[in-house]
Structures are given as C-alpha cells and as structure tokens.
Length: 382
Image 1 (cartoon, rainbow, N blue to C red):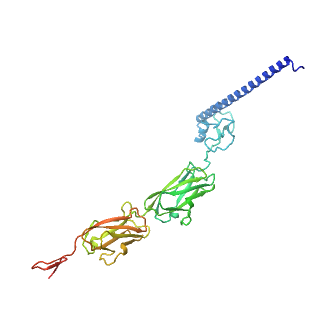
Image 2 (cartoon, one colour; image 1 turned 180 degrees about the vertical axis):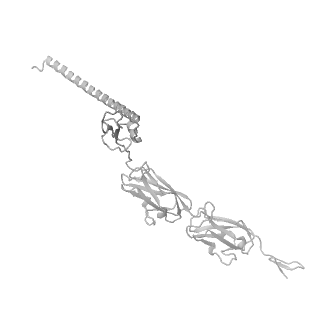
C-alpha cells in the first residue's frame, strides 16, 4: 500500500473527518437525551405526587401535615442524580433525597382498598450554636457583694431554635460590664477571678455560671457576653441593678437658730440616705458622712442637748440605718451659713454631698433702762 499517494491521503482525511463528525453527533445526542430524560422524570414525579394527594383526599385518608406537605410540594428536594441518596439533611441547602411509598397491604379487586404510606421525615438541624444568651431574669445586686448562687448569671450557647447547643470547637466568651468598678468571677463565693472575664466552652459544654462584685453607684448596668474565639456567635446582654442609697440629703427646711445656743430637737437637722426615687435606704456597708459649716466658729453634736460632740463632725450609718439627727452650736456673727454633708467612706453614692442653709437669729443682749428692771435673755431680774 502506497501511503504516500494522494489517493491514500484523501481517503484517510475523509475517514478521519467522518469519524470525528460522528463522535460529535453522538456526544450531542447523548447530552440532549440525558437532559430531556431528567426533565421528564421530574415532571412525571411531580404529576404522580399530585395524583396521589388527590386520590388520598378522595378516599378521606388521614395523613399528618408533614407527610402531606412532602407528597405535594418538594416530593424530591433535589433532582435525582445530583444529591446523595440517604444522605443526612444537615441544613436548608443540603443535597439529600426524600422518599415516599404508597402501597396496598393485601392487593385485591376492590376499588375501595385501604392504602398504606411510608415516608422519610427530613429534619434540618443546626450544626452548632449561633448566639450567646443569658437565661436568668434581671438581677438586683448588693454593692461590692458577690451575687452568689442565689443570683447567678447563667450564660448559655443556643442555636437558632433557642436550644442549648454545644459548640463545634472550643469557644471563649468574654463577660464585661458598662459599670466602672467590677470584677467577674467563676465561683459562687467570688474567690476565683475569671481572667479578662473569659469563660471557655469545650465541645461538651453549653452553659456557664457567672458571678460578679460591683462597687459602682446604685443604678442599672448591663452585663455583656462577647465571643472571643471558636464558633461564630452573636453577643448576649443582661441588665442588672445595684441596690442601695444613691445620695445623702437634708430633709428639713432651712433653720433659724440662736447664736451660741444648741438648736435642739425643735430645730434638728435631719440627714438621710436615699435611693434615686427619694426613698430612705440603708447602705450595703457602714458609711461615714461628715458635717461641716462655712461658719467660722461652730461645734457639731450628735444629741439634742449638745453634750456629745461628733468627732470631726462624722456620723456613721450602719447597714440598718438611713437617718441621722445633727445638732450644732454656732458662736459666729449673725449671718446666713451653710451646713454641708459629705460622704467619707462606705457605700458609694452618686450624690455624695448636700447642703442646708441656716441663719443665726441673734445673741442675748443686756440692756439698762432708767426706772426699770434689767432684762437678760428674756428673763426678768429684780
């Protein structure tokens, strides 16, 4: 055979072209046929599902809502061949198949035969937690006192269905407060401080107990749990308040007292510890308040007869007290003066000072009058 002849070469070229064309034709036909077959299968399955539903409804069969939904809509939740048979459905976009079977247990000629149905329930589960949640109610704490087991903050990892869920990886959550003076602990006696306020969840844990000491003023604050590492989580918040007084106030009106005379019970200065609403409130710890005056010469007393001097003008409120009576002898000139109460130690107050005005009415005078008696301090002397 002369392989170099023109005839041979033309024959080989024509043959190769024919074979290549046939191959392209075959592949194109196979691809088009496959797609048409798949489309036909989908349409047929949906049609059968609709007919099955109509038949079951006509025969008044009772089927639970979940199965009915499967038969009519999304009979197969993926085109056959794309998903993995018998694969577990792990989320809303997973490729998995749903199967159903309708059959007659004892075939016969009756047109009113009872049909049985089998179905596979698809359950979508979160792979892990999605958020941080404090499951306890709002707490009211005592200033600078451990909240303890009775008022524990329970911090939980939950999925989108609000179910406690273990993380897929070790996860760290940091607890902080918008208070200015607090420490976070991991035990109910507040002896073990949580470094940086961090709590670590292993893959077998979903709940942590949080304890706190807060020495801030009595008001409302927010505890926040923020994911630091591990599973991606949304932040959780929990409000809490600190009980106790927020201010020191004088509850009496302005006083007019005599110079160098004890003001006594009738003109007592009443000093009180109150909460934000003005209610008398005991402190969480012994609290010292100092009384001073801008007068040049005065002495503060703790009794109505002005016999017991209050050292440095200090008054101590124990945890069972919220009110004190203040007495004064002032030997200054007759001018308006201001009494000031200032917290020295103990329970932290938002308003730690308060002022009360008073006036010295005058001094006893001695006056001689021709042909009359001498009067001194309102007492007639013969």
